[in-house]
Length: 76
Image (cartoon, rainbow, N blue to C red; front, side, top):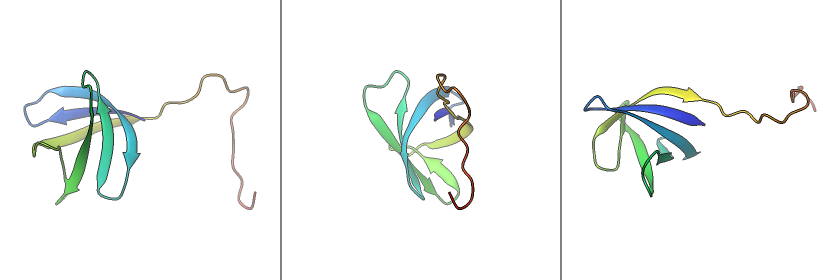
């Protein structure tokens, strides 16, 4: 999943969501060699360096080579 992030300095960054839990996300930020973790603390996402991060958008990455949409039905 692609993410658009906004830091407390007003800078926008793109990232890819790698893993998530209830109160944390592991992301790969564009231009960074390492992954980073953001944590949800008191209704605010906080980066590893302690700065606030806003998630502006989450964009699903869909495969482009599907012949037909995949669907799930209850009981299948």
